[in-house]
Length: 368
Image (cartoon, rainbow, N blue to C red; front, side, top):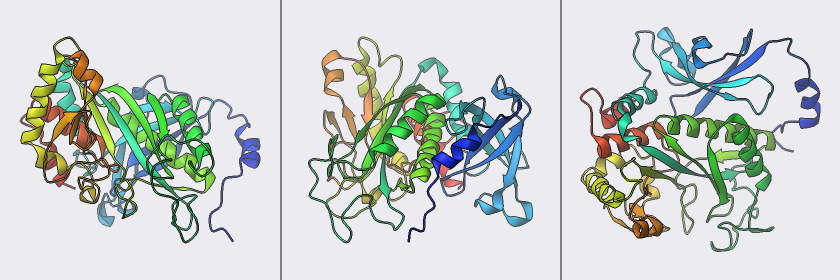
């Protein structure tokens, strides 16, 4: 018998159609102490017109590895709001930062430091696009759709595959795509990945801090959609050992100077700066990333920085079209699928655009 209770959409629909008499449900979501997502709902008297209309809230941080039991209240300060694709109507999703009662950012609140860097370098107009890879598992911990007690055929037909036996769980992916668009996420595409039951969605291009905001909300939406289908989502960078691709969060980057004629000079300068801080970047590019960055399966070695045109085995890839045009963006292929995007985008702007005295993203990560 199944141990997972899958949502009954027909029965639930009867209740979701009931009127709310002017009330609005706000689902507050936040990043917990394990780099996961938590949420809880609050009833509002009316739909807020802006983020400033949303109330501050709190939660028990001792239950989320964010505070001790004798001083457990952690405050939720709203920073962005989105349409709720699950409740619909005027109901909303509220992304919130976590703050301690002494007025300091909670240990998992890396958004605050990153936002200060973006504000200091706002004239650079830095854009990001992140490619979020993930793997689907069934309720028993087996990769979704794989033969019981066995393995599918070798990698080859699955990447951007079409057809039974080549792709799995497309319903979940399509549902997430539509939910993200409804919510207002700048989701730019989806595709099946190299390992069967591994998928990717892309968010961006986004300006500055909105990149991290929208990636976190898109992850929340994915987890909620998969919940309805009784499927688990894994963001582990190497969910299976052996001849299977890992999962990354390739991060595409450009400043305004990179996006115009002559931009290649600025791209090359940025790559030189990144080469000098390889270890610092790796330190915030996700846990267990060493299991993925082996120099195999379309990755560079974690021990050595490299770059190249159209080279998916390099740390930094310059797309062939960018090299031909002489301007555009570059792709950092090192970040793992389980990154905190605030740390990655923060250290990127710190390295490429310049640090500021009061913010150090490596130290920021270490305070966890």
